[in-house]
Length: 197
View (cartoon, rainbow, N blue to C red):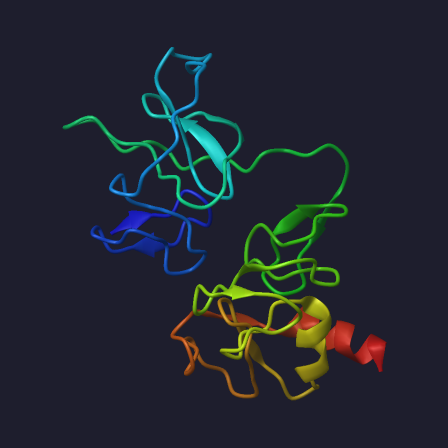
């Protein structure tokens, strides 16, 4: 098992993409190499989709990534695994995501932890469940993409929410029966939903 550089979920060693956030986790996925070397050690810098550029030698996070199709840094044979990158610190206060608790910069469009959209959906994005391009509040496969849409389904009886497809469940369960994703407590969501009503 190897950890995802974006969400730290453990994935099978032969996985190409993280089964939680769909970030590339294999060196077999093509990666863009940045022109400038790592300022810390001089190593080759490869981009990781949707998160950061990482130095292949020392694992230091170096800024925004290029998006889909890039890969995690390749490891030299026998080298120790590179540490997972730290989330970039944004200036200002961080607000906790009501779904997963991840701290996000004020005004962030999506949660860096679970990927839920905080505002109205703008344009197409990759569905965390089926990986199809989806727009709006909900994908055709049923995955909920925005917090506003999720709150429509949250009632006082909801106990947990799937971390991948955001389906709410009224019984405590560790795994989503729809997509197999881990579930998260819905305590914060219940409070938000009751405030809306």
